Image (cartoon, rainbow, N blue to C red; front, side, top):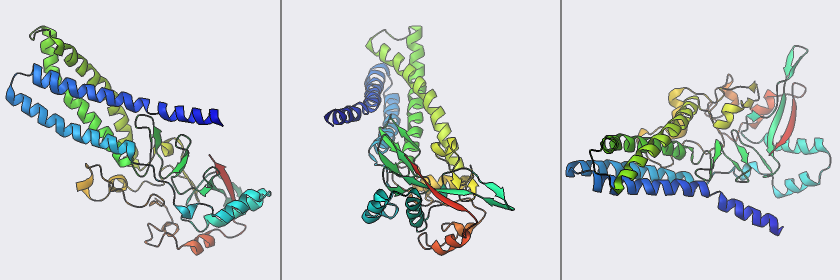
Amino acid sequence: MALSGGLRCCRRVLSWVPVLVIVLVVLWSYYAYVFELCLVTVLSPAEKVVYLILYHAIFVFFTWTYWKSIFTLPQQPNQKFHLSYTDKERYENEERPEVQKQMLVDMAKKLPVYTRTGSGGQFIERQLERQLTVRFCDRCHLIKPDRCHHCSVCAMCVLKMDHHCPWVNNCIGFSNYKFFLQFLAYSVLYCLYIATTVFSYFIKYWRGELPSVRSKFHVLFLLFVACMFFVSLVILFGYHCWLVSRNKTTLEAFCTPVFTSGPEKNGFNLGFIKNIQQVFGDKKKFWLIPIGSSPGDGHSFPMRSMNESQNPLLANEEPWEDNEDDNQDYPEGSSSLAVETET
């Protein structure tokens, strides 16, 4: 137990190493740009002022969004999705798997859960029977809401989980995906601004038009680092822009979500504008500012469904009050319902 606790402690400490690397690079870039370039290399006072004002404006948003991406905690499912204490005791003490499954099925019927885990079915007597497998986390003891997944690094279920990012040492999900996307955008802008303003002085140092002083190393290396990070960040940012335009998470891009009607890769695609609003909200004045504006509570999401009555968010119904309709959609004998535990 002591060894296990020590390993967990070391793991938590080492998980901050990538963040520390980024922080050190950013601090050096600040010193190199502000002091070595603007205050030492640039001779024009007007040019110095313009460079410094624009740089600090971008730097503030860059660091602000990075801070929010790191320290905004992932949001977990609320208590409605957890097994109660008595149900948990019954579930753990029950030895019959079919009874355990039925207990979880009964609980899932009371929740706005529309995604499943499982494959398609088979055609029997002119009916397509599908095995609808309720997503259950046996570590957190909860029915997983739509788009929720268990993060093995954070050891918790995260609402609308996208991925676990080591560079922010945090799980990216419903609560901080907007901040993470803004961080990528301002990182690209930060690197692009540095590269464009440093380039002319890089040429001057290269041609020998400026004296070879200590600032030369900082300016040359600053351009190299900015270009290197810009290329990698613009690719990552472009990929996430594509995900937002399709209203997908990284996990959903690699693993097609399964609904009660079967797998549907565009199940949450509402159209370009509405997809953007699902991340940034409907008020455009908040799109560039790292404050929470994503709609909903992370437990239920609008779906692109043929039958809108199965989706309370599209049918303008209360999300917790359509249990009877769900039960009528799946009469006994028309489908089999099972529960699969996921970790």
